[in-house]
Every structure is written in structure tokens, then in C-alpha cells.
Image (spheres, rainbow, N blue to C red):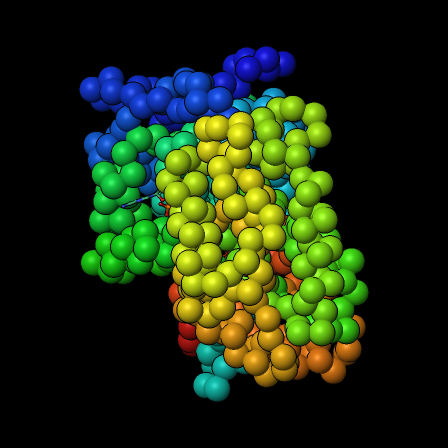
Length: 483
Ligand code: ADP
């Protein structure tokens, strides 16, 4: 990696303001998914190091919570500025460890920084209120306080943004945080920690523990000092962490799996719908929790939409994300490839038709051909499970009621999308969909000012927006008598 500032590439964890190795010196390697080459290694830490980081976060919390929101905001603002100033290097680190095209990595760094900027400001506005009292001589005041030490566990698909949208509101609210990044993308997290240190975030306020997920997670969820766990990842792991947090009744934010429906009605602008489907389905090689997973297309426009989608998919360029013009990188690992293969094989065995792609890419490693399947039905695996890969399955439907019923026939409820130009239909469908977010005539919905999150088994809480900071606060009610 040719970084402008090589000091952003750290192979140590960041605990209590110090760069350190695992207690026993163990490490684990991190691999570039586009080449199979080892990029470097990070400490393989476990419960003991996590416990120390939590204790340090608790110590640091005493001072950090006492700062004014404005003082915290000034420091966070510097962190934002440093991310933007080092955007090229951060994007290069991200593409090297995660595989997404450089343009997407650059977009993610700007998006990641925007959460720090936004919450630096929101922290100043996160006040309480007064309530008229029913009792003479008393006054009722509500104040909002930081919940305390927060533990965060983040995934590999957005190695920077999933961190900042947790750390931003937590730190702005006056909490401290211990983070465990995904094993496959720790270098982006550690680079953010370098910049946090440079920005003047005090010792212990933000620590990054790398290593064994289960051991670190077990300590984070059982340690009574941790008041809140915030997690983005699969529903299975989220469920497990929720169970583990039950014993100490921690507050939880969970951003879990999705199974997003993408509905194209017969009055849709088909070119716009194809553009939206491409952005929603193939961004990050289909590895986002809001990626369209099931494309429902109304009978009358089904064949026309399919043809246009196949033409758009043919223009995708698969390759190493560092190469100019590449629009789809490798999948994160072989496990991810196997899941896409399994979904395709299952669908084909049950009568689906292959319109494009369908197999591993000639480039090898974990590259996969952008794929489109037609005649997909509800009995196929892809109808129930998130593919998390570059495969668009096209289902056919006839009526609006049928589309909404099919879209809601899942235990997930994160994002959904639909394309229509009829205002009545737009309201009816938007209200009928069971999901936390609805993209209407757009395939891109995420930004720092809007509330991101799901219903049903897609999670708890919201990230971003004016609502996001509440997840890191507790309400205290002061009842003042004798007045
Ligand atoms: P994915 O399938 O997208 O990798 P995971 O839910 O497995 O999603 O991973 C998301 C994050 O959860 C990663 O940081 C991973 O290391 C962590 N993780 C996985 N299993 C556990 C566990 N048992 N306890 C704590 N963290 C875990």
C-alpha cells in the first residue's frame, strides 16, 4: 500500500490511549480478498485485554461526561476534519482489506465522517425538557445523561461507517466506547483510532480491541460496567449477543440482517427503476444489509425490466477495486461465495431461469459474476434468506396487494424499495410495507440525517438523524418539591 501517511497503517490495537499487542503476543493475519495476499496482522486479543479497555473507558467516562457538549463537539469536529483530510489513504486501506472499488471506499469515508460531523452538532441540541406539574409547589425537570461505557461490535461490509455511526453519537452524548471491529477489516478501524488520537480524543474514551470475536464479545456482554451494546451484523449473532446481555440488562442497539424487497409497479419509470436496482443490488458486490434481495416485478413490465436490467449488468466491470473503472470487487471470502452459489443452485433446481452470470468469475479468488435470475418463486431459498452477493432474483406479481403481502412475508424488516408514479399507490404501499426504511423511486437511502434501522428481526434502535443520539442517553427525571 502506497500511503501518503504510512503511520495510518497500524498493526497494533489501541487500548487506553496506548498502541499494544495481545497479552500472549498472538496475532492474526488479514488478507486482501482481491489477491489472496496477506496485508499484515493484528493482535489476537481476548477477554483480559477487553476487560482492561472497559475499565479504562469507565475511568475516562468520569471526565468525558463532564465536558460540555460544545467541548466534545470541537474535538469530534477535528476527528471529522482529519478523516476528510486523509480520505485517500483511508480509502486505500479500505479497498485493500475489504475489496470494494476505490470510488465506493472514498464515498464511504466521506459518509463515515458525516456521522461524526452530524453528531458533533447534535450533541449540543440533545437537551431535556420541563413538564407542567400536577402538584402545587413542585416542578418537574427531565435531563438527558450519557448512558455510560458502550461496547460496539461492527461488521466488515462498511469498515469505517459502521464505526462512526456508533462512535459519533456515543461520544457526542458523553459516553465512552470500546470497539471490536470485524476480523477481516481491522485496519480501517485502527486508522480511525490513529486519527481519533490526533484529534485529541482523551485517553480511554475510544479504544479498539482486535481479535477473537467470541471471547471479546463474551466479556463485552457480561461485564457489568458496560451499560450498552451496539452491534451491526447478522441476525444470528445479534440474537446471541442479546441473550448474553440479558443477565446484566444492557441497553441494546442492533442493526441486523435484511431481506429487502424491491418492487417495480407497471407505472414505474423503468429506466429509473433499473438504475435504482443496480445501485441497491450491486453496490459493494451486493454485500450490504439494505441491498435489494428480492425484486418483485409486475406482470406487464416484467420482460422489459428484465431485459434492461441484464443490459445494465453487462456493463459492470469486475476486478480489483484498486483498478480504474472497476465497479464490482471480490466478495469478502469463500464462505460468501458459497452462499451465493447455494442460492443460485437452489433456484435453478426449482425452475428459475439464468439471464446473466451465475458462476465464479474467471479472475478467481472470491470474484463472482454479476447474476440475474428470472422466474424466481417464494419456495426458493433466496426468498427467505439474504444472499449478500451480486445476484438479482426476479419474482413476478399481478396486484398491489399481492406485492405487499409477498414483500412482508419475511421475519426481516430493514429496508424496502418500490417504483411507481401514482401518488395514491405510493402512499398505500409505503404504509403497507413492514420495514424501518422505504426507498420510493430511489435505490439509495442512507445518509447521516435520516434514521437508519429496522423492525421485526432486523433490529432495535436507530442510527443517524436526530433520533440516533437517544440510543446513547438515559432520561433522568428531577422532581423538585417545596417550591
Ligand atoms: P457477517 O456474517 O456479516 O460476518 P457477523 O454477525 O458474523 O456478520 O459479524 C459481525 C461482527 O460480529 C463481526 O465483528 C464479528 O467478528 C462479530 N461476531 C461474530 N460472532 C460473534 C460472537 N459470537 N460474539 C461476538 N461477536 C461476534
